[in-house]
Length: 98
Image (cartoon, rainbow, N blue to C red; front, side, top):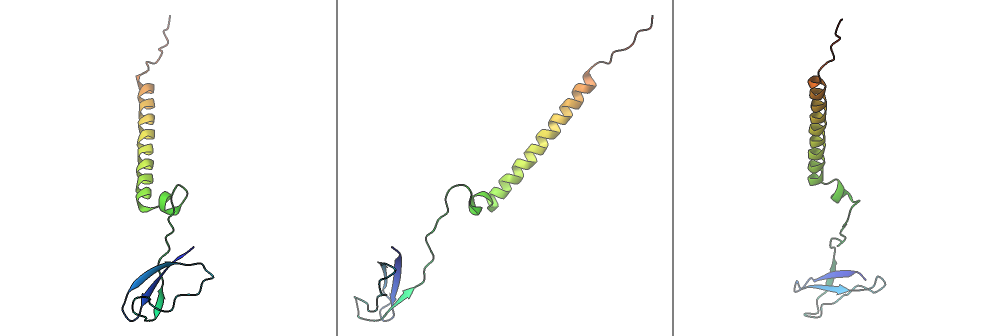
């Protein structure tokens, strides 16, 4: 059941009420008898876990992704340079002439 907020126009008292969708809105304030107005509040939905934009593609994660990509590039360069140095360090077989 949703939680609704009502504000009294006379005394300014704010009240939270859990009501069914089918219940009629409240009309009078219990404290002063003034008229109540239903307030619009942001929803309380929270997206938790993997697979949501906020978790997977947010600003912090973009930076982490870029850092990961740059570290992968550095590792590949290191592998290539080490394989090149291994090729250079191997002695070449010289053909001896008899």
